Length: 345
Ligand code: 5GP
Ligand code: MN
Image (cartoon, rainbow, N blue to C red; front, side, top):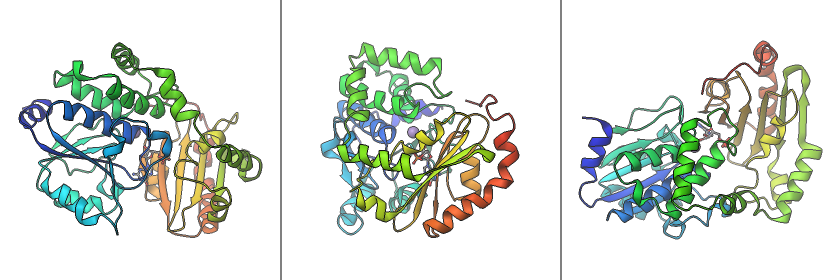
């Protein structure tokens, strides 16, 4: 039986459904979760979305946001474990390994309900009974659209659900410029437009709703914190915990900064290393053939996509930067040779 037919059978009666997504959800993580939740509620299911951490304020406009349970280990652990235990179906969206959802990972692994993975990251872990992962997809929201369509319910995608899905596709394609922006992506956007979504509203809510302080922080980072290493076609930014405090940086305020480093002519590899106190969190981006998911997997216990990945270090910020710089000679040939060669989608 095909996976979609199995899912259709599973959802043929009202179910207790749990949906979760990755740590520090971005627009694709939250948009695909709330888009799916909106659809499942319309079908008569009882749905709880649990995020493993908080997320930026610029995502709070999404319909269903008010019902999201944000997991806080010392506060609602018992409540969240109970939701997971009672769930008949557990949807895991926009992450491929259970270690990406902190303690929730082990609760989900132990859960008795049917696990459904909808994701577009490379190298998915084998933990779900129904697996809709496809690393060629531009966004998890694209896959959620296809699942709803293939269940025969595209007509249930209303403006609210459509705008959640649009937000995920818009951000994960870098506003429709990454090579993942396929014909299929544009056809789906056309369908979402037919459902009545307002593209410019979504764009404005996500990209043009920052605080003045965040913009000043951006100015500081670009002026004082950006290092360009021409011999490696690489640029990076390292931010200390003290600098985050000084600019009252909130969740989401550092999102997208790494793209400025990548926007320099000739730069093919960019990184931002941020001291989050418990650990140094790193974002990697590239253009062309250099695989940051491989770089991150090999060196920083991370992963992601060919041109966008993340990783972690438990060393100090300084030691992490030194380690990062020490790795570059090994990759110099890749970074300088034919760096803009075609990328596999
Ligand atoms: P970002 O740099 O925006 O946090 O993440 C870029 C991409 O890499 C996203 O698709 C994200 O889900 C993935 N990613 C970020 N951090 C990690 C990590 O620590 N491990 C893995 N496997 N993927 C990550
Ligand atoms: Mn995604």
